[in-house]
Every structure is written in C-alpha cells, then in structure tokens.
Amino acid sequence: MALVQGIAPATSAIRTPRSLLYSPHSASLIASLVSVSAPLENGRRVLVGRRFGRISEARVCRAMVQQAAQGAPATYAKEMERLSAKESLLLAFKDSGGFEALVTGKTTEMQSIDVNERITGLERLNPTPRPTTSPYLEGQWNLEWFGTGKPGSLAARIFPSALAHLSKVDVVIKDSYGKTTVNLKLLNSVESKIVLNSRLSVEGPLRLKEEYVEAVLESPKVVEESVPEQLKGAFGQAVSTAQQLPVPVKDAISSGLKIPLNGRFQRMLMISYLDEEILILRDTTGIPEVLSRLDVPPSTMAEPATEYES
Image: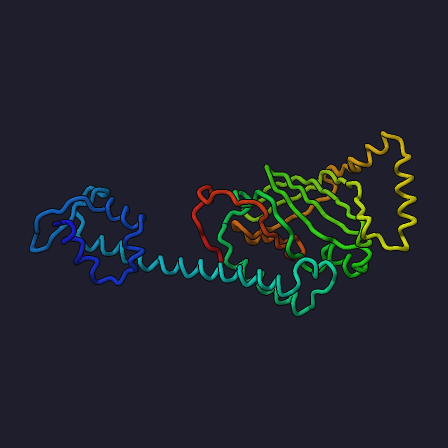
C-alpha cells in the first residue's frame, strides 16, 4: 500500500492512455525500476531503485512514464499512416483494373500516375530497415504491378492482347535463390510457362543482385474449347504430328526445354518497401515492381524491432 501511495503522486499529473499505463512493457519497466518504499526523508518519500542500486526520487519514475506516454502515440500514428497508405495503394490497383488491365494495355496514364504516387507514399513509410536480410523477404509472391519500360509493358504495346499476353507472374524466394514463373497465353487458347531460376546476392541493407542461372520453357497446354474455328484444322494436324514423335523426343518436350544461362544476365535491385504482405522493388532505372504475398508470412517474432525510415 505504501508503494502505491508513493507512485500515485508521481503519475497523477500525467495524462497517460490507460493502455500504456497497464501495458506489459510499462508495467515491467516500473517494476524493475522500483522495488520497495522507504521512510520519509526531509519530508519527502523516496524509492529504492533495484536496477540502479541507489536511492531514486519519485520524479525519476514520473519522467520514465512521461517519456513513454509521449512516444507511444507517435508510434501509433506512424503505424496508422502506413496501414492507410498500403490500403490506398491496393485500392488504386483495383481502380486501375489490376494486373489484367496492365498487361493488356488498358491502364490509362492518369491511373498509372495515381498508382505510382501511392507507391512512393508507401515507400516513405518502409517499416523494415534491412529488408535484404529480413525473414519477410522469403516466401511466395505475386506480381501486382510493374512500371512502363518493363518487358511486359512493352509486349502489351506491341502485341494485341488477343494474340499474346501475360496472365500471371509468380515469384518464390528461398535460401538466396529465386524462381520466377511467367504464365503466357497465346491466341486465348494456348497456355505456356517460362520459369527463370536465379541466384540472389545481398549487396547491402537494401540492395540485391539477381543473376539468372537457368530458363525452362515448359511444354504448352492447349485449351481445345478456346481454339478459334479457323485454327482447329491446323491444331488437329499438330496434335497428330506430336503423337507420332519418338518417345525420347516426347519426354524431352513434356519435361520442358532447359536453357542454361550461367549468370550471363543479371540485374541490381533495391528493396524500397517490405512488410508481411507487400514487397516493392526498383531496378537501376528506378522502375517499380510491386508484389503481394501468396503464402502465410513468417512469425513476427523473427523480425527485428520496427523502425521507420522517412
């Protein structure tokens, strides 16, 4: 009871949120600082500090609580700003038509400017100071957005969407290796995959070097119901010819064509934003790539304490 009376005057003058005063962090901090109450000295009650091994006046406890009370709202406001910026970016993706509109060239210039503005706003609130070594980097990701100048954007301008377009791009990052699967659709009836295997090297807290090791062209799959009438005759002849191929050749085709690259192609990347759901990359041209997580993120216990870089 004496201990409570000693602490109460020290904290009564501070308007502190109840969640802060009764949080595990603040409770353990005060408990480790203060252990027992001592008699009055010079008309004032003093407290014995367990951690410092000397007599500490009640105002020390008050200063600690006041400092925590001032810091907590600022951190909370920063986190709310980050979550709002992320939600705003995801809504901008949806309003622009998403990945389908992007790869078919239907995204307008105003929509592209709006998305890029929101990307920049979210990057400013990056909560991961060292993303290249963060456990959040590993996992399965889906490409949501890429800027103008990327191969997919150029292909959308050259080839009509009815002829060929990207349908999906997935990326798996694990143990310093990357696997990018590009799903293509030709004539709206032929589905094909190109798999790029790469090696990732950490060049700094934000920088990665990606070296392409191998490309695999998987055998295409034809959706017969989607084959245009004018091509069904040629399609039937191609199927008949493929069935007459020798077994070793058919096995080689079914397993895909592997092309060794041996690191001849590489690029430098900067991770400008990373959390448990969103990954933003920029190459040397500054063009952004935004990916969203497909799998369950790793435990937050493995992530270092949150810091903000603005």
